[in-house]
Structures are given as structure tokens and as C-alpha cells.
Amino acid sequence: MKKNRIVKRGIIVAGLLAVLATITVPNFLPGSGINDGYDEIDIMTGRVRNTWKLWFVTVWSKTEDSEITKALTPEDFYDTTPNWKRVIYIPPPLTLCRWHIHYIYHGAIHQAIRLHTIWHMMETTDILSGTDLDTFKRKTAKDLLLLWQEGGQDFVANDYLAYLDDMLSRWETPAASIDERKADIDVLLALKVVKTETIDGKTVTKFNNPDERR
Image (tube, rainbow, N blue to C red; front, side, top):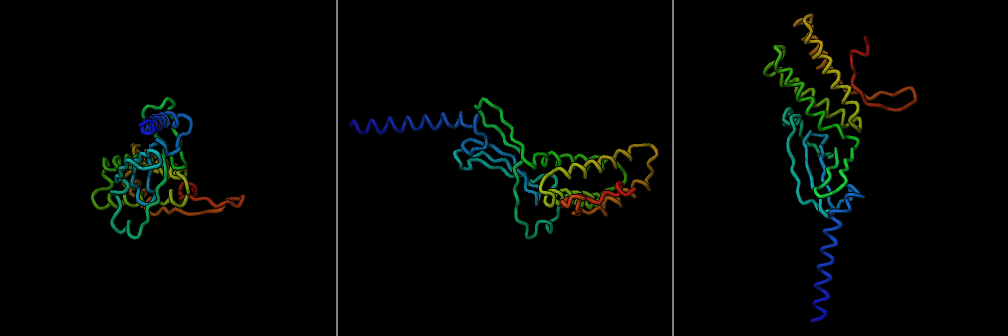
């Protein structure tokens, strides 16, 4: 009987310590796997996943198609292996320190949302509609994914989105004609993601921005 009581007490103490560790460890070791949440993105398809791990075991995970994913066609997914990248660490409830660990793809989800906003702005113009708009969405979605894949981070994608923003800004000026806008679209559809070598011998990923050649 005495031995059973000792065992029961040991189990209770161990349980209390586990609960205490679950609450306190993330304050000092965020990302330890004891009680962590993450937002992730698949840089092959644009899918977004939210995951919660408790004591190194995934207890909850939700995967959704982003607007980028929806802009792709079935052939874009053919023979594609997911490549999930962490975007941001989400501190669990009940922790005192609100850590936010940013990773090299920390802006990827926001960039996907930003691209969707650009598409929405495109829909308000009379330049593209129907099939042409779908082509524009697919092209820019694939460009963004390729910049993530080839660049190994999300920095170059910011330059690409800035280029799209600048293009739309030009369209908002009264002097922008329909022909000029269509010419911009033709240039955009011809853009390619390329790798170039810098003066110091490093290889960098970029897109062949026509503005840089003016």
C-alpha cells in the first residue's frame, strides 16, 4: 500500500512538473518543441500551414490554400514535392514572454497577401479581364514562388512586388494611356527569374527588371 502511494505521488509530481515545464520553458527556450506554434508556407505551391506542437508531437495542424495556390493550374502541381518553410514562431498561451522568432521566409505569407491585393487592384482596371487576368495571376504567382525557391529567402520577392506596385502607380496617373498599360503588361509577362553573378563572385537570384536597363 505504501509503495502504491509513493508511485501515485510520483506520477502526480511528474504531471505537475510537466505542466509547469509546458508553461515556463517557452519563456526561456522558444522553439524547443515543448509548447510551440508555427506559421509555415510551402514555397512550391503557396499553401499555408499553422501547426501547434506539444512535447515534440504535433497536436494540431491546419493547411489552407493561399490565393497564390488558387491561381495555379493542376499542371503546376504535377510531380511537386512540398517544401515547407517556417515563417514565424507563435508564442503559446499562458507564457509570460511574447517571443516572435522570424525566419528567412518571415515575410512570405505577407507577400502572398500583397500579391493578392495587387490582383484585386488589377480587377478594378479595364486592362485585363477573364482569361487574360487569370494568365496574369498565374504568371505572377509562379514568379513569386520561383523567387522563393531559387533565392533561398524572401528578400528578392520584395523587389518584384515593388515593381508591380510601381507599375500600378503609373497607371493611376492621368497621362497613362491604354496602350502604355498594355505595354507594361506585355513586359511583365516576359519577365523571367534569373541567376546572375556579382562582382565579388557570389550568385544571386533576381528577375530581369526592364527598368534597370533604361
